[in-house]
Image (cartoon, rainbow, N blue to C red):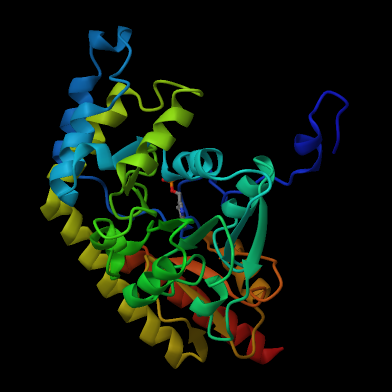
Length: 358
Ligand SMILES: *Cc1c(COP(=O)(O)O)cnc(C)c1O
């Protein structure tokens, strides 16, 4: 639709469409990569304490205590850390902070679809890099003139990890570009590029509390990088909203960074469940991309993905299907609890049997 009241960009843009958040709770929800395990008690306690008469006061605009906790966790100085209202907000700020309309930025053709939406919203030119047949990122495709590079690692929606040596190569070849590595899923088995920050001033690593830290509902993300990059983000934030994180979110996120045990336990459970369901689905004739994330990307040799998607939905099992060329015969399935995955698996077995009878 169009409106005479809207700007050109708003008339033309197609916004990002998030996965469904059905309000019926009697279902198996494996469509938006949320963590199936709750955050720890200390996180709840800190948030409950924050619900006090102090809510009449604005929160700390500099997020000092949260940055201190992040500084200890990541072993980086506080001026190398930016916090935002979800990593989506940080990614949006990056487009305003680092790129100009005449610049060309690069990202893979199959990746988190928000990058394209932000490029259009901020009127930044972009080129996409084609993945190979195994959904791998060809590093050489990033070795030509550009002002910025954005890579989700592990990639979404494939779950495929790019080795840290390849990221190093991209950084070496692009000293004048800002290279953004979106590590929303890195805790589920990858090596973080955070260790490269001391060597590369142009590297910005973006993390979220929504996946590995079970706090999608709180909206907290982090960016880590050289202080010039962080100051660029601060400038944009302070032209937009001084208080992007509320008091409750600041308190919960800080404790989450301090409770390393719960975080690690939950991540390890998810990794085990992922490996288990991967081998079971392969035995059913699925192609399952090797995943280092909290989801798997799967395709069946005979039954179309869209059919499986619809039939799972009829059984109240929600997964994600993208009707996009190159991936339109794939489903992205978040890793839930072992129980949720066995209900999902049983549903899939039934659907394959029905299909075979037709
Ligand atoms: C989920 C996700 C995000 C968004 O995280 P929020 O912090 O919840 O905004 C960013 N990038 C990728 C690749 C994601 O999958």
